[in-house]
Image 1 (spheres, rainbow over the protein chains, first blue to last red):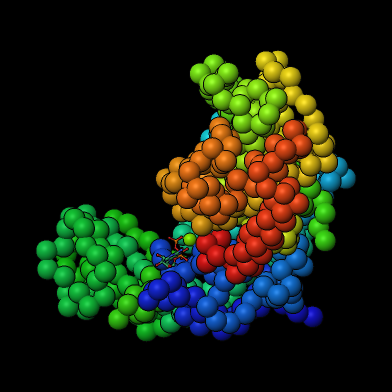
Image 2: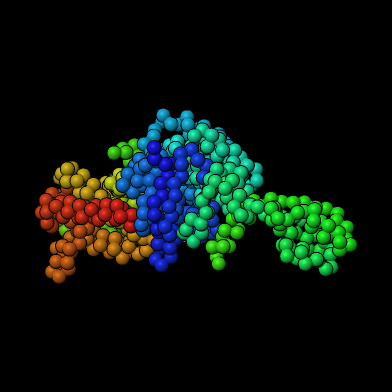
Length: 307
Length: 253
Ligand SMILES: Nc1ncnc2c1ncn2[C@@H]1O[C@H](COP(=O)(O)OP(=O)(O)OP(=O)(O)O)[C@@H](O)[C@H]1O
Ligand SMILES: [Mg+2]
């Protein structure tokens, strides 16, 4: 069986700029896939190639086995895309926009009940007859999501669906997207909120300068060297004037009476360090440890790429 | 064939100009009416172009055709550039529509707008002047074909233009001069020989000449020849449009 998305040797050049530089991976059916990377990494460009909105300079992409250029009708029928930009047609109401979009996909009145359901799921029901122009940014974002789903596509790609969205809406979007995934849709999500990717995605690709610099399961990502690191924050009664050399080595940050240390889980012991701190004669008033999270992995990988 | 998809885009395009009808249909009809009032008042009685045809009667088919083609062009070109500039063209580009379906939908909707405006000018015009009808077939075929040629040209301009002012340029430097110099207000026989010859290279001349034939049964050139010129123009422009669309020119770069 073909993968949900097959990306084979994709290059995209804009003049001299290599927006995509030999991207190659598959998204499997039923996966919740995260596509991460700093601004300008090429995430949206890759999504545009998958959606057929831009043509790759080299390489090929298929959705459920259908080439996005030569077999575009089938590939587009199976793909729903939520674009990053908040675009809308100012001439129409929410309901009209959804009916028109469904019509483009060959669907008529038989899908109207589904469109009503989508609107109520996305809390747009009371805006159904409002002109797109009059909606707030968050509402426009939800209409974009509904538009991507009018034809019940098997594969759904969301380009930063939670950018510029308030906390409450973000959480309700997570619930909504999770539900889509549970119903069997393959999901590809890009986001700059790493905790979002960490809590939602099974597998993650990190893109930088048009190249995939890491591709792994979430657990695999976290278990990389970086994952064996641990951060310890120690608060003392008063600032430590002279840190013992063993602590200076591990120091990440020092601010007034708080020091933050980075430890190797295998070779360092928190107890020993605490003893070192006490040996300076100040009392420890608070201590907490933090595991490395996706953000640490991300920052580390992107930094390595810059060297 | 995604016929529902095609029909939806066509319907959306019609709805789009229908929602702002005052601007898209009302305004051009009023403009034509003003031309009619001013020119017929100034020139009535001083000029007889065809024997037994008053100047006002002569003018109305020209004004109809001019507003028909200008509005057909305006509709497809402005709709496409607006979608490009606002970015909502992605919704169309994400859909499983073929280039032919896209082209036909934009083109036909623009022809509808052109025809509605043309008819509006006629309805207003016959309040003032009686018009004979020589051949309904000629009127309908010249109306539809001319609208289709300009609608197609509008699709090309809309795809090509990246900013509104480029489109305004096409409108002011190509469409307006060619339609004004095509014999809307005069018969080319009243022009000096050089300008007469030059007019034969203006495709708009054949539109208006053939259309007038439909009313009066008289024309500067054989209407069959005019028809052939229009069919050929439409064919060339349609092929160009489809080639642009299939390469993704400025739409899927
Ligand atoms: N149409 C275009 N013409 C020229 N350059 C482009 C075009 N589209 C994108 N780029 C360039 O390609 C690179 C990748 O852009 P892209 O939008 O894919 O990044 P991204 O990973 O989505 O970033 P962000 O997180 O900011 O959305 C950038 O350097 C961008 O400037
Ligand atoms: Mg992006």
